[in-house]
Image (cartoon, rainbow, N blue to C red; front, top):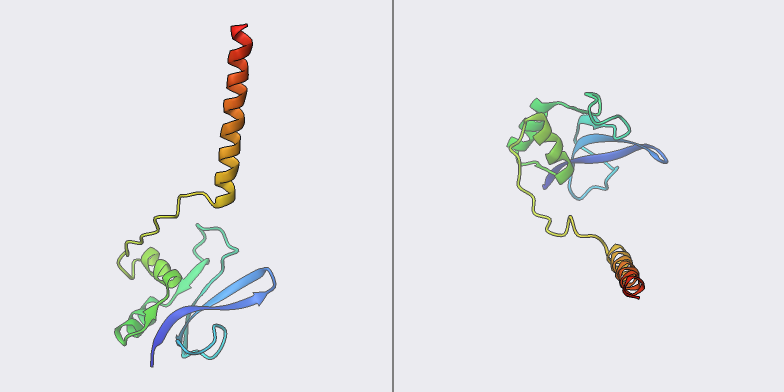
Length: 124
């Protein structure tokens, strides 16, 4: 059985609250789980200690038995000091999207045209 440590969503519309659970990877996101290991409340400020609450001992025990944390849970574990930091590679992270590139190009063309018009006006 493939076991994952992942988030299970709760809360109402636009007010999310997540439980950190151990579940069979074939089960639905909010479906049956084996054990609840903690909670995550994204509405709290980042510095608040109640934002992520984890039972680190149980997490380590499940990981020893082969449970794989999802990427988000892995980040929580890294911040808690329970797992070593994993290097992530996202080369497209800093590049703007297609529409933003088009806006920047149009802005640059407009600025170049304005500079050219100012040079012609000063030459006369």
